[in-house]
Length: 414
Image (tube, rainbow, N blue to C red; front, side):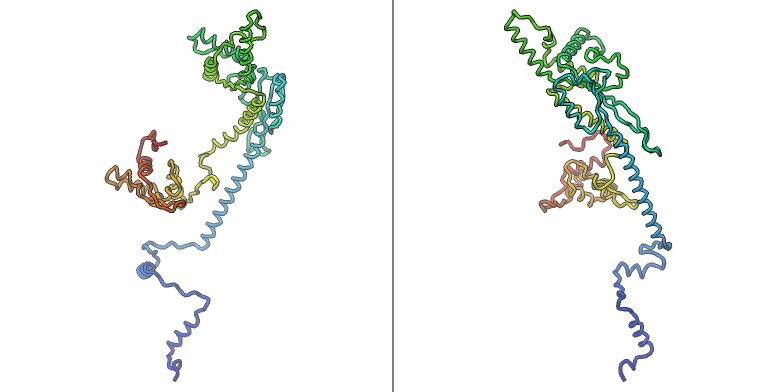
């Protein structure tokens, strides 16, 4: 008889079971040594380490996924709302207005700075100011950013005031200041009203004044030349328009008077050669004042130097600890002259600060602690040659990890 006819009922059952396996179903992979031991040694209902297995509730993974998506949508909506509020406030804050005194238009060369002023993206007007020949700034400020009807607007005047002083008038006022300071050296504070009369102005204590002098060097050279010519012709009388003893002030005396103005009166003096430079100075001040609320808003945010996002090199840390290794590597990279490859090599050898501290505790001598990281190899992507961390960086990281002195300088070579 054939082989198939000699098979018993058990053989036919095994053949039917083998034939019932579909060719589309993969065969089970052989278990590894660890898996086989776990499968044979672990009792029913326990994991590989002998811990009880947690039963998964049906639909739990889908619920978690929906919760994560809901949170992401809420965060996206919140970020969008904040961006819209900031953009609305920024549009209002950009509505700067430069208010200039009409006396600034008397000079024939004033057309140069007015041309620069008209090129700015802001309003400007010429109206009488409290101080003649001065410039002030004002803007539209929002009262609130979250009102239902939109941000309410109010006009506020900035604290900066730029005053244009003629060279002759400036030298006279500066000479009077130096004489009063010399004649009364025991006075606690010089009389700054001789330079800029502010005693009768309301709110002058809250303002920041800057003086601009156009053409001072040319004025001094011209008058000194006139003085030399008059000395050669003693019969001629000095013209009434020529300044007197203030021209005898040396450059050192002028600088000393400027220091007094800056320290006692918080006044900055700008020496400009042309009206073109005056216009550029007005333009720079206008842009700086316009950006001030935006910078103030950035500084008020929590940790503004560690902004989120890939563009700011931020690292996202998940609840399960994912991303902490990247944070540790970035922290090492903040040391001076530390490349990303060096930081990665140290972070791979000691994946967390606690492990590095534990390694320091296991060292027996101080030299061993300072040189613990010096022999860690670093792979260079440029040269392809391996190098070491080195003793200097190893010493700096050791001091950073164990020192309790807040004023300690880690890198003496900088």
